[in-house]
Image (cartoon, rainbow, N blue to C red; front, side):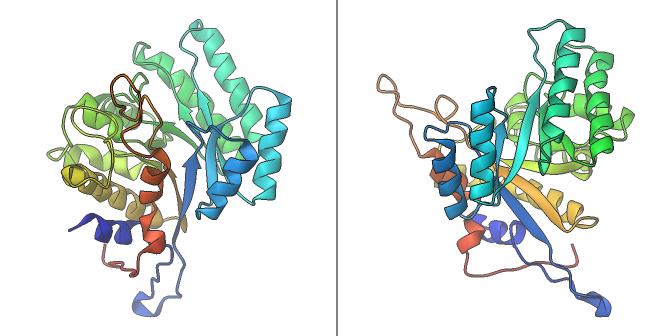
Length: 300
């Protein structure tokens, strides 16, 4: 099945479930644009993001009050939702880092984001140390009724599939943001033989980072290039399963298009010119917005 058809399946904005006389229910994907690599003002970025058809942005909360006000004003002006990022500072001693992680989470939930995505823990921490960060996040998420997801990410507790399975089995409240591009390069494969291993991961994923990786890197240079079709199709297949599963109990799903800028985006030697356009790569992940057909298999 080609990429366009997969995109149509995954990102259909209106899905009608009318089986057996049941009331029709709208199912949707809320698209968020990353501000990673942003070079213009926050207001200009939000204006461009809204015009492109996004529902919100994913962003680290700026450090100064002035920049925080500019962010919140731009979100309100352009009627955009926000997903915040939080992270474990691995350069600090464990206890100090844990407290900083907790304090920043409390600051973020007070701003009522749609969700919070965390770069949690470290691949050098023990299970119990990483669990302490996860427990803090779960407690705050429950108290404020705001989803807090933990991104599958190199350098974090979730840097590979087997370790993440262990955390999922021992922490029932753990919810993931699946950025499976990281695992593609960590495991040097498209995980095509790991369907059973991925089941628990897909079931516990509430958010996605839509970036396409491959066996030798976390980001293909251009997702539209024909040489990456196999990698793109593999990611789309996984994302489809995640969204279908989530829609069994929720009416909407959040997804961030997260192709990165240079040097995450490959560049030409000497000139350092990016080999493709980050903004266009992310828009491609939203291509269904302009697709001329819609399709959904209600038997899924």
